[in-house]
Image (tube, rainbow, N blue to C red; front, side, top):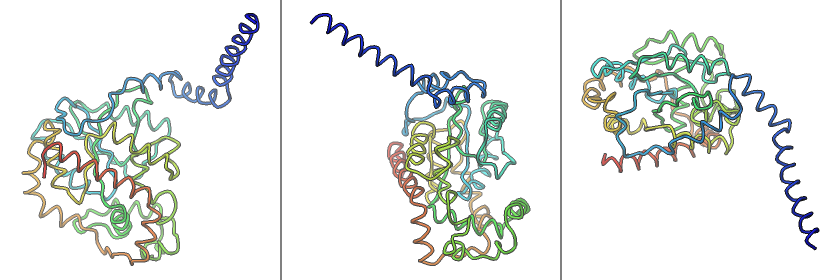
Length: 330
């Protein structure tokens, strides 16, 4: 009986060890390891970076020690206004503000990620770096992760604004950049197509993965983010919890500025007073030309297509409300 017990235990241990070895050297794992090695990293560096993270951001805390901020701005969510404020405050509060001149490269390959990270950390500290780019996990590159900020708006309002802005620009200009971008991707037939027609005919701007752009921006560069899915949504939420000091709402821009001044005084001290001076001119100049509201039918169709973005927007809305409550901002 004792021999049988020893033999049974030996078989169990052999199976467990054998399964572990088989898993370790499976084609999937080998491909993953080779991919990391080609990127110049040991396969275990990813796990090492993950193990050491500090957990979720504390919403009611001042982060005056933070010296590097990445603002991966979502298109048509008030970023021009925030940039105007940040530009002026950089001089007043003595920090560097790096403004990117790349507007249409959200997704980055391995070479692009390395170049982006190098460019980011080339800026003298303290600094804020802005660019239209999907979330970048610096830990995956073996680097220290900066803190993020961002600003969002109702998903349907955002896509309607973006649709008309790409065709007609803004009242205050300059519009040469947006004209160049439109001509790069579209033609005159596209320009004259109404938003309702785009939605109801399932044209590329109003159909497919790109309509849930907010989810992709916060999900990031990971392969799981390329197609709309619950996994992409959950990854976006995780990134927000861990990396974003604040994600504000354009619909409550004044409160967003108050939060910035409270949690990042080294950068945004005096922002609310400055906005009072700039708001009348900036808000009028940023209005999109020829923007028409979509029909109820088109609105309903787009809300159904953008269900992931609306789920994420609700998550951000609740998080921002809790942050204001913790900071005593009304």
